[in-house]
Length: 437
Image (cartoon, rainbow, N blue to C red; front, side, top):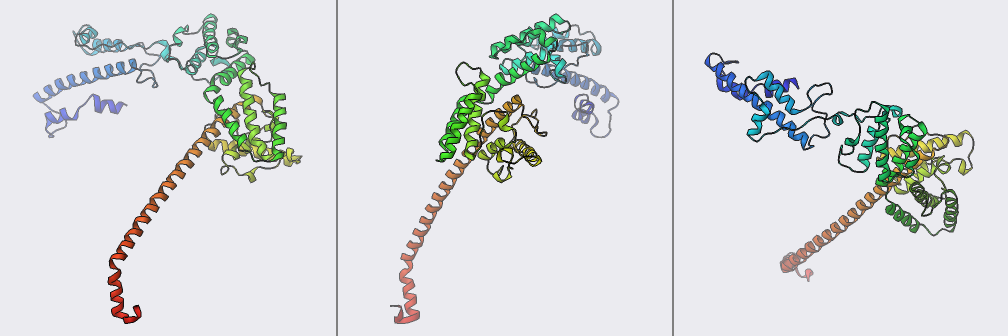
């Protein structure tokens, strides 16, 4: 950066060439005086243009994702302060440079507020969300609000307990308006005082009820369930297994209009998993025990991407009659295999513990895993079907084009034969005589 400023801002090769004619490195005499005067004007113009450009860019949010213009330790926080300081230090008898620029239609108005200096990075979950600033920023993102429009309601810097309670209260009210259910069970002091259970409950509500709707669409999932069910082979045993799965699902998940959003999503996911795995003779009736051995996850991936995960790669587990250390080793193999194929599919969050399989599946982790997996598989399946459709259409078009070329070529050959047939027969008669007749 220093080299760029020296070579591109504080010097100019064309001006230097103008006064040296390439005969020396630095002009001297009367040329030196003229060179310095012209360089002063040029450097002043470039510096003013740079400050004005950055001011207009920040005001237009063109540089919204870059660091702040001013460091936190700086005493100057606005472009007008920079120009006044520059005028005071480098120019003499100029007065108020802001007023001079306004006379020619140039104005600067950017001012760096304390909100612009906030760091939303979370390094310690137990402490970083207590002031409510990061929670409010999450609410802005989930509600698609204008950046920093909600942060202006906060009391910054949040040093005292009352300021933190106010900020957390603002964030909780925003989540309540966004549709997060049971948010009234969490009070502002729970977050400020760092109650682990309430903090985790709040984060789960945010992830499960505000974020999942942006990932998984109800109508698409129901359509996919019906599509899987309609593509089932007419096998009485598998239809009986599907019916038994549905009775177990109804027993484990309360599916009705009055249940909360999470239960509705869970019910649809279990129905989707059951519709797929029952084609292979595997029961799925919940999102905990049914996925302990990893077989169900592998079957879901195999159904949509047979080439990515082969059926022969799935090992038998306790549900197939194998027990002891062999069953445990096979379960770990299946889980690692499933998570490895998920990473190849892409689109899976990094917070899922895909490298260390557990003997007991944690419900919320598997719930999020199934949400992302379902969305990714349906999306990739749509992409594959689109590619196959395009490939089929292209091959049909090429076949029609090839057939048309063959017809044209055959017509040309036949027309040429009709035109030269008599010459051919005459040449053959002349060569072989009456035998040609």
